[in-house]
Length: 107
Image (tube, rainbow, N blue to C red; front, side):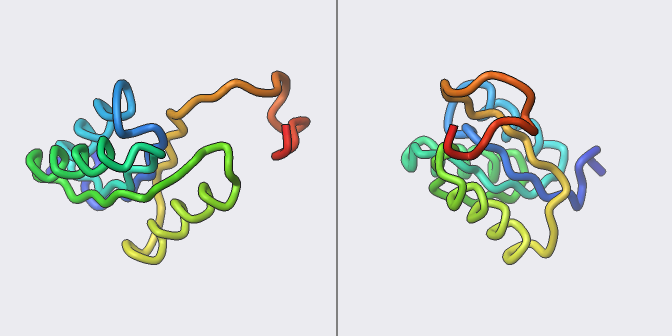
């Protein structure tokens, strides 16, 4: 049994780089993963790689600059898999700097 058996994760920016590596590792540890990224081709490739590592994954087209897209990724996890245990916010973009509680979605 893997360390993440029966856990559901959303990983943003999971179509490449660190996010891809995290998704594959999570899959190897037994997690079910929502691959959330703007890169459909890369995301779908990572879904296949996760399945090769005995994990279960789905792709969700997600722009992390769009609050509705983030909600969509979370909702997909809950609707399709019943719950969400891990939110790995890997994707990055430039924007406002400061304490999270003082930054608005518009920033």
